[in-house]
Image (cartoon, rainbow, N blue to C red; front, side, top):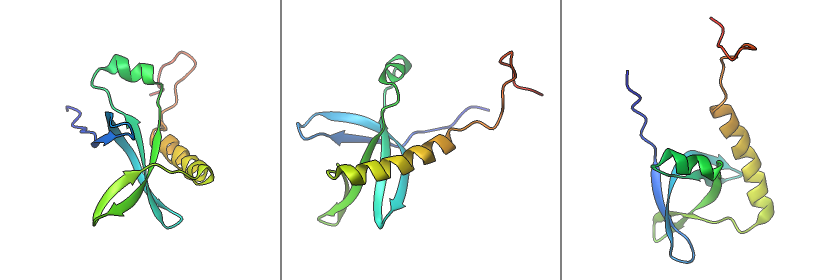
Length: 107
């Protein structure tokens, strides 16, 4: 069976007008606000490996009835939200299978 995973991709523009594509890792409500965890997306797997797993956390705001993702300016808020996201992401990507000492998965 083929893997039919299709990532949720967002093209975001930074304050300098530079666009970059990000993959959505997780969305959560925390302390009454909505937050997004994203990572840069690369079509070339080699570029993805070089990135080393950067995670960007953005906050939901509404502008003219449209939801937008904005940077979190408060460092304490960013740290609190980041800590919760990292725990959630680690749990999402945690493997249940354990390898034996030879690197094989037990039967």
